[in-house]
Amino acid sequence: MRLKEIPSKIIETLDTGKEPIVLVFSDGTLKYTQLPPHGETKIVTHNNKVTRLIFNEGELFE
Image 1 (cartoon, rainbow, N blue to C red):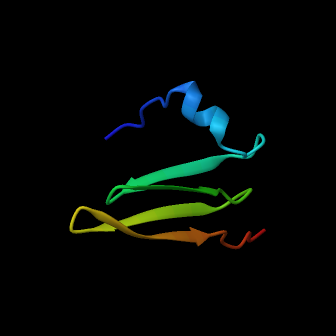
Image 2: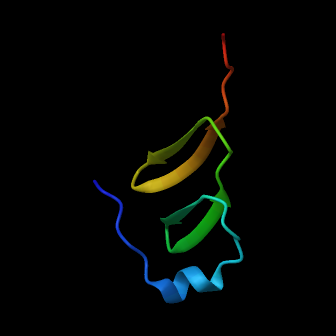
């Protein structure tokens, strides 16, 4: 499944600045959150519903 564009009217109502965000629509509710500056974010689903978001900023090994 690919991401789809959201109308600009909806985007203008969100007070996010220029930070990257993720919008999640599940079970009739639309929620959004800011993404971390680096790392991995997982969206977990169960029975056609989003159950959680997992933020893993990880560690950098050099």
